Image 1 (cartoon, rainbow, N blue to C red):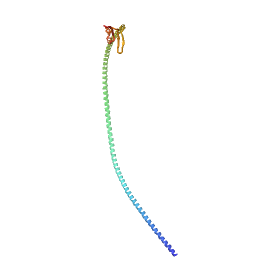
Image 2 (cartoon, one colour):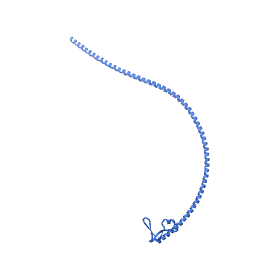
Image 3 (tube, rainbow, N blue to C red):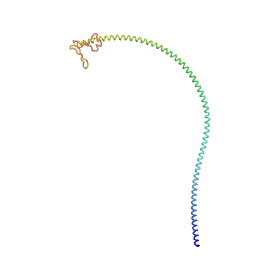
Image 4 (cartoon, one colour):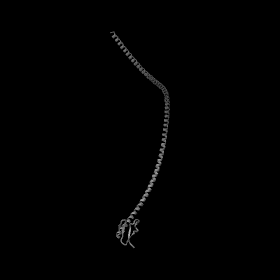
Amino acid sequence: MTIDLDARIAELRQRRRAEEDDAAGEQDRLKQGLAEHADGIGRKLDAEGKQIRLMMLSVSGHVAAEQARLEALRTGNEELRTRLDANGILLRRQVKWTWAALGGICLVAAGILLLAVWGAGRLVSEARQEADAIRTANAEELAAAREDGARALAALEEQLAAQRVSVEQSLGAAGAELAGLEAERASVKAELEQFVTLRDRIGIRLVESHTRPVIVVPEGYELRGWRAAGLSDLARYNGRMYRVMARK
């Protein structure tokens, strides 16, 4: 029984020792894992610290740039305020000068208007005088023109009367000439009628050819120009008056 108890105690001790060894190994593994985890956390913390430092540096740069920008804006605002104040003073001066110039311009305009009114009145007076002079001159010229027209009309009437007398004389001469022409026409007509009678008695016949008229006379006769004392030159020269005579 003692042997069994010792064996069991030895087994328990062995088991306890094995468990302690296992626990020690597990503890070592845990320590190693914790150390590795701690190292990883440390590295992460270092990296994050570096990033934080970089971000702080960047933020510091941005803050410095913004501060510089704010300073520049503040300086620009001060300069702008100064310029606005100066411009306000200059503008007030310009307004004063403008009002003064406007008053001067109004005075000058009033003077010019008065001069214009005075000049216009003077021009109107001179224009009236000139119009009266022109009206008088026109009346005189019109009277002279009327007199000249009356004289020209009288001269024209005299010329018309003289021309009327001349035309009447010309008409009388033309009437006398026309009466002479009618008498000559009657004489020519009588001669032509006598020629027709003689032609019928003698037996002259006119035969038409293709080119010119042909006169046929009895055998042994010939045509000679008619040179009667009472025959007109027109009837004698136009070749229409002939007489038939025996050939010699």
